[in-house]
Structure formats: structure tokens, C-alpha cells
Length: 198
Image (cartoon, rainbow, N blue to C red):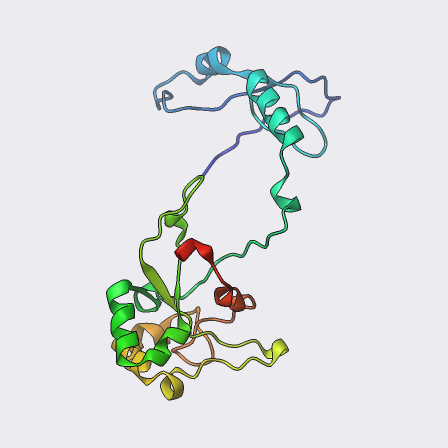
């Protein structure tokens, strides 16, 4: 987590703001005043909307990228928070468990979906870890989509969940039944065709 220490005064902005990014070479015994004097940069991009702490060269690169690039907010994509299971150990399974559950009942494939965790997503790529989500969703009332009744419709998955019943019952992030994931209005995104996993 980044920490900012701001020292301000009520005065007109003269574009003379100094800033410092403390790097790994700063030790607890380092003289802060001397370190600041040696390593600070002037911020010339301070305005009412926002500012970034960058050297002049870094700021020019940022401006160039923004000039030719397209901001993420203008892309025609939707970004969601992700799935909160409340107990990943039960809901996120490896390929062996996925195959075991599907071999026990091919219908189980309907609610077992490939998943990327945050740590699987790299700067310009991803690394699929052969993990899968048991998407026993809680339904969406506004769209008249019923929750998954795991006990009735997916008995082999229910049998698997029984091993984790104690933990699944006490989790805070859960659906109507202890086998359901918490309510998620975008669970249908898991139904979309995804070239990532081909």
C-alpha cells in the first residue's frame, strides 16, 4: 500500500510543488531532509483534477501515451470485481477434481467453469492454472433466474460440498443455501464464450 505525506499551505499554486518517491534505498536511519533534498522532483502537472508524482521525462512519456492511447474507461468492455466465494477451498477446484465430478455425473459440467485468479493475470498476458469454479450461483431475482439447487440438481457436487459443510455454513459470503455462492448480478458472464481457455 502506498503512503502519502502531504504538507500544504493555503496559497496560490505557483507550480513549485516538490515531491519525493521514497525508494528501497531509504532506511529507517536515513536523514529524511537530506534524502528529500537529493531525490525530490518538481511537479508541474498539479491541477484541480489530479496530479501524479513523476519526473519531467516520465510525465512527457505519460502525456505521449495518453495522446495516442485510448483510456480504459472508453473501451467497450465491462470489468467486474470477481467472485467472492467465502471459502475458495471448496468452490475453486483443480482439473483432477473437475474431471472426477464430471465423470461422476456429466451434468456437473453445466456449473463448473474455468477461472483466472488475480495472481494468474500478468501485465500483458495470463497463465491459466487449470483451476475451475463451481458456479453454484444464487440466482438473480430481477431477471427471474432461480438459484442453483445443488442438493436436488447436482447431487455429486452436493456430496463433495458436504466435506466442507461446517466452513460453508459459517462463511459470511454465501447465498440462500450454504451450497450457493453469494448473490452476483454478473454471474452470466461465466456463460459467455471465452477464447482464453481454448
